[in-house]
Image 1 (tube, rainbow, N blue to C red):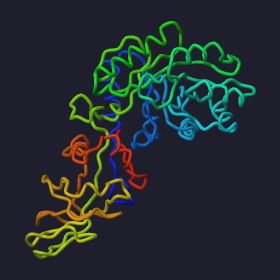
Image 2 (image 1 turned 180 degrees about the vertical axis):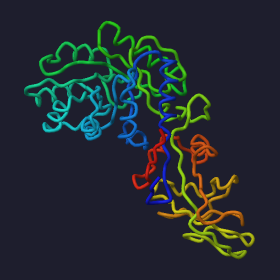
Image 3 (image 1 turned 60 degrees about the horizontal axis):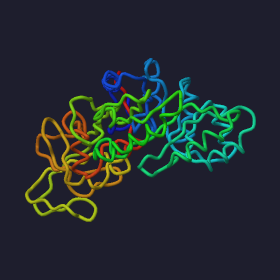
Image 4 (image 1 turned 120 degrees about the vertical axis):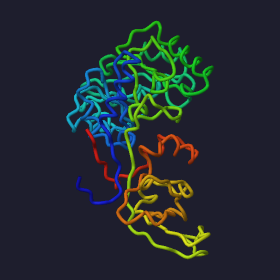
Length: 357
């Protein structure tokens, strides 16, 4: 393993595949692998290549046109759906058609605009229904019926229809309302793909009406509600190494703003990871794992470094676990009052990814 930095993220691709298999055994229908945001920070190239040959991975989902084009240039032949709204310049629509990328149809107005840009080959689309989350999508049966009645079949290949649940990992009443509305809207029509089940819906609910599931956060081994889980295996671990240890005197202070003051003579380790790597300053006061023990981060986290209060057993070169086998992302997210999604997506590109197969 040749690294240019002591700070790196370890990505266990075996765990990734295990998580996909676990979900498929439960859902028992084809899956759409969601690899937007650089596969939630795990590295879309390696993730896509590793799971592309799984026969029940029917499609991939991304958030932007550049992400979709990059997958095609990587050699991915399976369907690719852009989940969000794509900018509507003609050259962008031409690229979507050229690369056989499926766009999300979000409104009647959007359909008419796209139709005005399409000249020769048709564009693949999935209709998005807003069943209660109120982001993008058609909001009524009347809109859907008008779209289906007026869509130009020479310009569009209508491949699917979908919605997104706001509370599949929470409020059941709101979830049930969204699900009932979705199936009420689609019941009188036939589509190649009908998909509403995200990771949370496939984890916490039983669904029989859709024929495709969107696997996102559970693929990366994280519970959708942010809870500890034994069902999935956390794919990413984050490590660094101690670069220096020094003994400071009682009363001396540490870091920008000198916000930490030593209560006794103390050993302070400097670790080369900071907020530019995605370790936000709110981690001050949390603990890391070194040589079988937990040690507190003291002083403000810097752009490229942080300081940890240790003891005489810690030395330069010792491995530091930020999260991994001994510190779960679920526990870290609770400490930071956020969700595991945010933590992994914030790990910056300058943190090298090391893959285990």
